[in-house]
Amino acid sequence: MNETKLIADLEAINRRVDNSQKRPGAKNIYLAAGWFSDNQEALLKDAFTQLSANPTIAHIHVPLLHQYGGVALGESNNEPDFEWGAMTYKADIKAIDNSDLTVAIFEAEDADTGTAMELGYSVASNTPVVSVFAGNIDEHPINLMLSFGTDAHVTSTTELADYDFFDITPNKYTGKLI
Image (cartoon, rainbow, N blue to C red; front, side):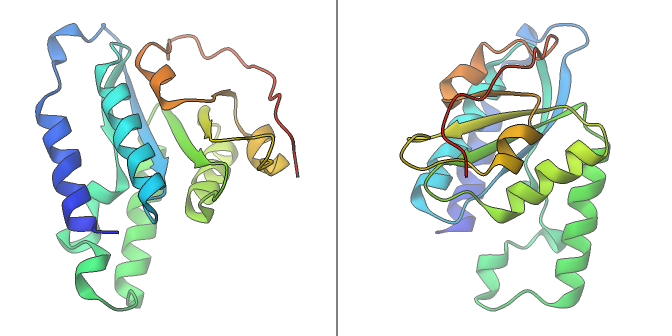
């Protein structure tokens, strides 16, 4: 995991966004995703790329791009201190509150607990949630709290480019549960 490189990659993706194709009333989203493995990093970057191309999305808040004090945690090479942890938590909660909806990315093989908390807070605050359950959801069942906590889900980040976020229609989770 190299947070500094991942941040640079996400900022590069953001610079390539063509806002001229955005539809009136496009949504602001909170993108909840882990970045603690190579696969989670790849899912985050692909989700960000796909959502950036979606004309129903105006702004994407990625918590990693808004680290407290402007410093990625990995740069300090140690545990987060209390101030960093408290302020990061508060900033993420406020960002969810300020968003129209949350998009939560889960790797079936290794669902991130922070993303699960963000999904739970979104549900509790009546913020709609669209989740991506990527990977083999039959071989690696999704926790029922995650699968039932989402308003709608897709099984690939590529589906996010064309998803109509003006019409979040609930759909039934069909994978295995734990």
